[in-house]
Length: 87
Ligand SMILES: [Zn+2]
Ligand SMILES: [Zn+2]
Image (cartoon, rainbow, N blue to C red):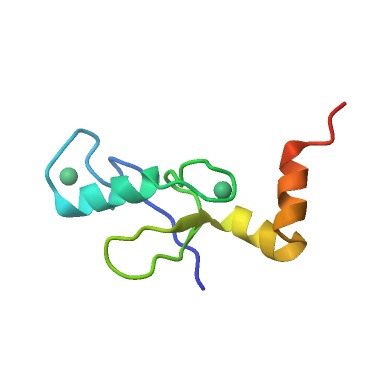
């Protein structure tokens, strides 16, 4: 599975900076706003992500970095690490 990135708004392949009615722009914005299920943060632009969407109308994106850590260490260890060890 290859990771992708979303082009920054206003860049050559990115969506318009201002609100517009372009289909491609709307799609890119929607993907950038999608929430990574591992860290609960938005996918955002210029950040590697995996598209695990299955079928139309269902968006399931995760950060590549999050997914790689989970694959490497397991989901439980990942969440433990995020909770932090405290001080
Ligand atoms: Zn546009
Ligand atoms: Zn994430």
